Length: 442
Ligand SMILES: OC[C@H]1O[C@H](O[C@H]2O[C@H](CO)[C@@H](O)[C@H](O)[C@H]2O)[C@H](O)[C@@H](O)[C@@H]1O
Image (tube, rainbow, N blue to C red; front, top):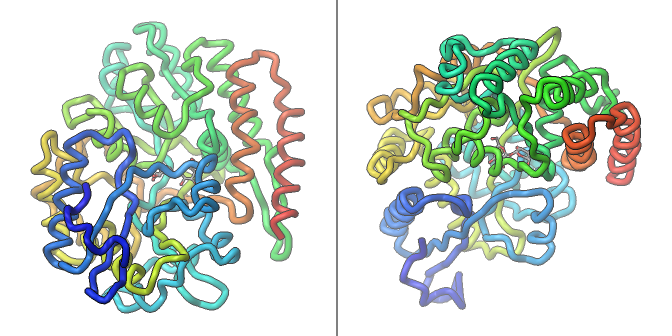
């Protein structure tokens, strides 16, 4: 979705006052309706800001490709990063200082403090802002497969033992895998950490001075053993070690698995890229927890490339406001965004439950503004929405987080592909490598 006006591309902040910025757009897998919806929002932005031209680029953050994009200077002016990466990129001077532009926004001082801290430098300046979505990991399930297996889709499992039992019943009755696990790229480690957090464990501790990798935590082992048993005792785990964040969505939408864990925002992508709609039979419930366990929570931030000119930074923050944030703060923007999503053919998701970027009151107000446009199957998301503001939330680890995930995903792959995988040894090795990553980042 590019504007036809590219006469200022050689001189983004040139004498004409015109500026062009590239911005992260949709996933490469997004369908035409999603692309059209984005194009419509770009068009209305350019109408409001005639001196700014927006060029959108497909975007899919992956740890394995991001570093090269950053180093190679190929990122768009506005790009997305996980919350986990803000601090390091700021410390390494790899993000543009957008402090004055963000603080000039009418809500510039209203971000959830813990979230904006991830985009704030030691100098107190803002380099990245929470955007797109803040999520808690939740359990996504196929209601039709539950029904076909004689299970009540209105009573999804609330313990990992029940997930295992239901997965087996579904597999026995339908031949479809009852459960699947991301195992590719850092996504596999991220979801193993979520499993461990739900069982009361963590993958890193901090004593006020030092960070210690705890990849061999009892809860990590328990979750791996649980996956092992689904695969090797029950035969109910999808036999794939190559599923990343988007791949598992594709398999789920194709009806090839009944349950998996991922962020609560995944329904947006299932609609955007995989043709899921409110009649599809999608269900969302809380991740099972035990003991002190909780739901891993994380999210996305928008940042601006370091080499952007002042005019581009100004335009970039205007776009961040337009595309990600103003709909949470301004009724007209909320309605305009929702209307454009509903008008798409097929309609894009409106009302997927996520966690607040500002405050709970602000989130609830923004949902109220768009009540009439909400088209996600909220009745089938109650297992999650009933507890989303009360459940225990476990933030992602703080130091070298993606490096820890990178150490964990091969362990997930080993457990799924090798019945005799030595979980203790694999985790001991992963932990040593994870600790080295933490130490070398100091
Ligand atoms: O690649 C693994 C990483 O994935 C997370 O982000 C992805 O999942 C989010 C929740 O569904 C989604 O909002 C985001 O668009 C996806 O890229 C996560 O935040 C990372 O920390 C994690 O390593």
